[in-house]
Length: 274
Image (cartoon, rainbow, N blue to C red; front, side, top):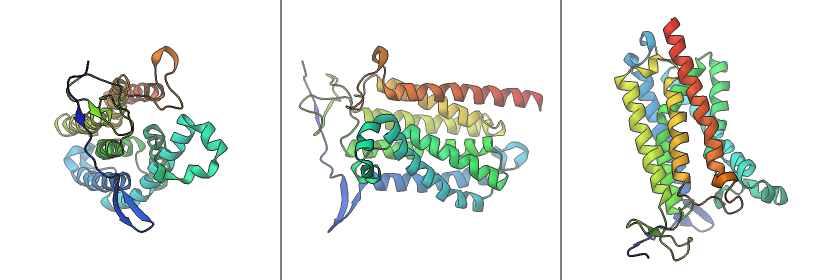
């Protein structure tokens, strides 16, 4: 029996509407996440003491150049990831809808692969350490994740299962039952918690001096936190639950955890032989 429920704060997903032109919170979240992550990575890259031999892997000007690469990787990868992982049949039937990003539909795992490819190509082109590049971008990624999940909440999407907990929220798109605000769980875990943990690793343990450690830690933490939230988050309607009650989010997070473990092991072994 439900004793208490928090009403959904009626925030219009459209921040500004000027005739046919609409600026949505979702778009603002992406822009804010990218800009703040850019500022943060420049501060980290400029702090010589955090890096091995007091030598950052790239300059502030090179980071400025990478912002465009990262933006393309995040948006293109996020959209294609959603199309391929979550709703391929629908988009094959209506291919023009692939470009209708204003209707929503972005995959973190797709964006992760997109920006990873961008980092690899940029590092090769500029002769930068790929692992250090991974570390630098990983340390700021929780900023974008935080804003993205807040935008999911404002859009009343990706909510959780019905709950009797006192912080259950009745979402306008989720029926009459109070539900887990899974978007806020993810904002707290994938955004704030990972950011703080990586900050401690980079500034208190010298993790950036062991290339791959920060990136590996991010991959492990994200995979674990995302899988935990998937236990209370309702999967996409077109997919539902998969084998043994798992979800697509869990399946896509498992390789991240494995890759993170491999990166940390490699970083430790390489440090031992240096």
